[in-house]
Amino acid sequence: MDAIEIPAPGGWDDPFTGIAGPDLWRRLLVGEVARSARYQRSLTVVAIEVHGTDDLAETYGVDLARQVLRATAQSLLRASRASDTCARIAPTRFGVVLVETDEVQAVNFVERVRDDLPRRMPRGVTTLRLGFGWASPRRAESAEALVTRASTRLMVELLGDRG
Image (cartoon, rainbow, N blue to C red; front, side, top):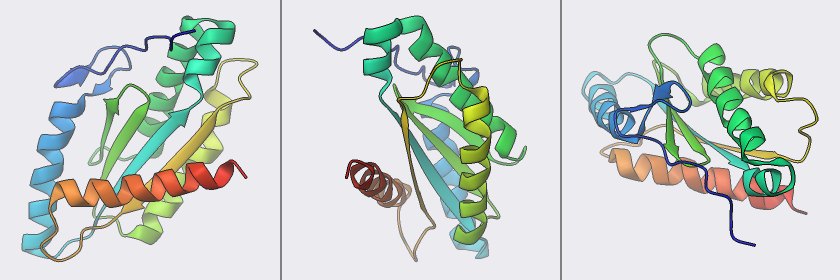
């Protein structure tokens, strides 16, 4: 059976989840990485993957998979500050720009989300896996390279969960 279509996030905003979309996130990310380098301020990017929504949609229906994505967005908003930017950047991937945040503080953010998210999940959802990856910019590192490092950490975590 083909994968169930989860709508891709919009450009500036994602009306499906109520948070920023990939275009706004990328634009803000580039600006924050430049600000961080210029003023030598901390910044961490977090990538979150909700793995298993296709199986969930196939078994219980696409509405339940969509509820999971909305719950994830709400949990990210709840754990973040007004100065942070939460976005849905791909069908099952979210990104968060944590300003004035080092990697230790980012781990605290990730733990808040891990604690909060199960309480927000629709009833009976137990088969999902969440992957988290984070990275702070290195000297002269581009926003794209930063996201790549966070995403690599995320994939290592997801693949490690399989064993």
